[in-house]
Every structure is written in structure tokens, then in C-alpha cells.
Length: 158
Image 1 (tube, helix red, strand yellow):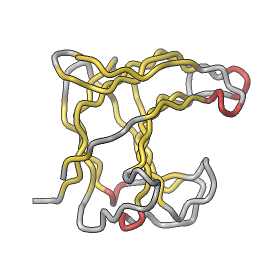
Image 2 (cartoon, one colour; image 1 turned 180 degrees about the horizontal axis):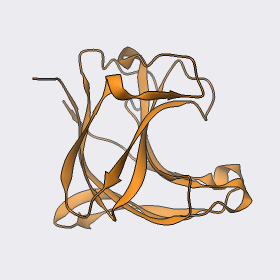
Image 3 (cartoon, one colour; image 1 turned 135 degrees about the vertical axis):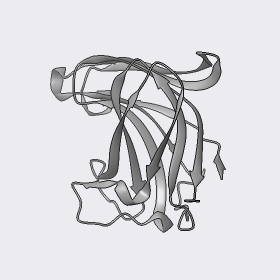
């Protein structure tokens, strides 16, 4: 199932950090993509920039129970990034279900099976029937972010 994300940009400045960046829609290495580009700084207790989208425009839960994971086309600057999932059961902004990936300099498909997600600062279990938001983050260390996402979809194991 193809997803059509309405990405939005968010930085640590919402919490007093000084990281800066932007989101672009552009042709990146030959593919139309959404690009997160910027500078991640740890100054002032900061440390992230991100793009994120709600699976439903009203922010309500999206039932992805019939799917096994999410796949996306990714390209970048050979740095490590996070993909994070939020469900309606998470109540704090620092809680998530997550994994990371390296955005290689050539386009590639990356699959994230839901069963591999790690809970962060929550005892809740990931339940795809309650999925709400997906984010791509440059986080946790000082570096220049440059990561492009061309396509995102839910998949089932064959």
C-alpha cells in the first residue's frame, strides 16, 4: 500500500536547541524526493532535526494491522538516521518505537519490519493497529544531515 506523506519539518528549537535545517521537495540523484538537510548541533541541550507525517490528516490512528512493515526508498550522505513510529498509546513526546538505517549515496529500498522496532522510554508494545505518526530524524550527534526519501509504502511478507 503506497503512502502519500504530507511531511512537515521539526527541529530541536521547539525545546531550546539550536540545530537548523529545512525540508525540500526536489530531484535528488535522479528521483523526485523529500529531502531533510541541515546541521545537527548538541548545543543548548539540542540534537535533532526531523521530517514527520501523520498517517491520517486528522492525527487519528491508522490501522496498519494487516501489514508487516514499512518500506521506503532512501538516499543520502552515508550517515546514520532514525525512523520512528508513534502510536496513539504513547503520551509523551520522547516516547517512540524506533530503528535506524544508513542513507547510502545510491538509492536503495529499505524495509522496516514492525516486529523489529524497539520501544524507547515506554513499556508499551508496538501495535500497528494504533499507528499514528512516522518520522525520519537526524539525531544524537553533531553532523550535517542530507537524507532523501522518494517513496514510502506498507508491505506484507511474501
